[in-house]
Image (cartoon, rainbow, N blue to C red; front, side, top):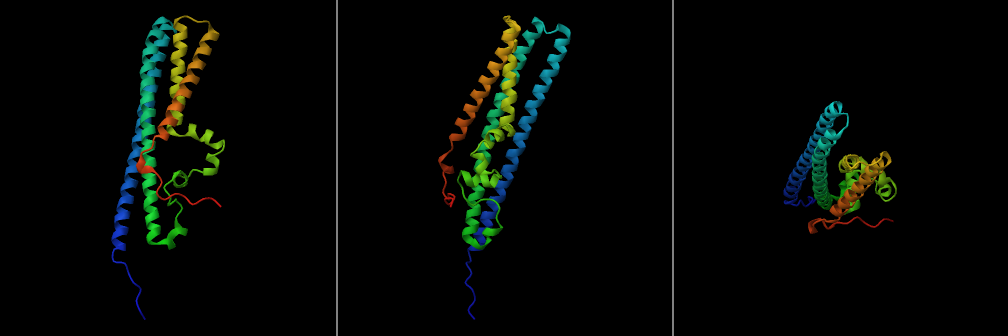
Length: 225
């Protein structure tokens, strides 16, 4: 009985692919660790600023001295928040790159052993639907209104709302310093909050669209039936 032909290089290719896969997994772990550290640092800065302003408010009773201290302090918090959101968006792009890389490796696994396909939950395709499948995001819901509620739940989305609130507080303090009647203060705070929220969302969308050529799909998902 003739023996089955064995490819002597298959095992070497599998070892190389597995090594690269573990490398990407480790890099993803570092990416998540840095993202959580950045968020922790920003929240610590915000908490410290709020405590300091609360102590000043007890002494000055929200007078001119409080406004003179609060605006520069919150401006520093605003800068830290914008820098944190920018870094989180960069880390998200990096994480997308690692997911695409692992999807390509999974495609190579299936090219070597197509019989393993029923055992894979993550996608072997390196386009956006494949990346979303690997990340556990429902593509059907992402195309509908559900994506609107998903974005604020992400770290950049959550911090964007907080940073916009800090910008709104600065706008309210600036209106108090002019001074402006109480309704004008509320209007200024709401206007600055909405403006900051819209500008940061536009900024975030532009960052997502700028992807390098290396992430162009090489193994796109098959068309839906």
